[in-house]
Length: 140
Image 1 (spheres, helix red, strand yellow):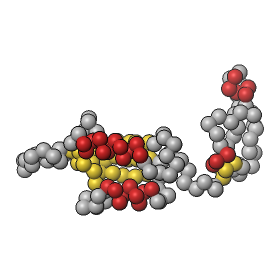
Image 2 (image 1 turned 45 degrees about the vertical axis):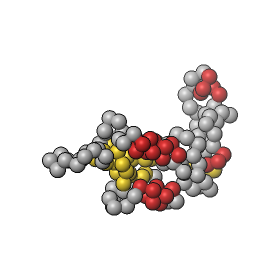
Image 3 (image 1 turned 90 degrees about the vertical axis):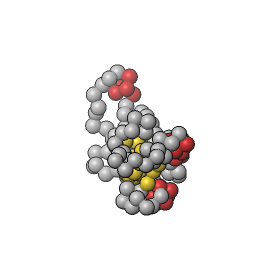
Image 4 (image 1 turned 120 degrees about the horizontal axis):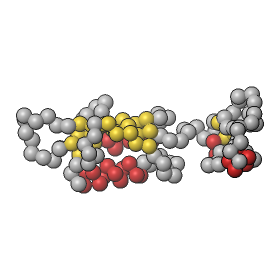
């Protein structure tokens, strides 16, 4: 935001399972406290960003677009066009916790010895694990 970028891609790598978007909200608050910019709904500039974020939190959408207006605290100069930007916030987790996910387990030989993957795991192509059963590293 300090660089006044036109487009910003934001992914959430926190353990924010309730999708409260704490890091994004904190960043936006700091930007407003520093008077860098303000935020709005790009589909309806009269709508605030808080209802937009709440709608996203309760939806199954993968991406949230947030409008950014720079120089909104500076005295208005009619000859100068205000610079705008957009934040694209990408949800980094599955929405449906009960949905099965396809996963091919990594063997110890692949990790330690650098062996090529074998034809282990699901052979039918049908997912056999639920999201909550997946871990960061699955070794047999």
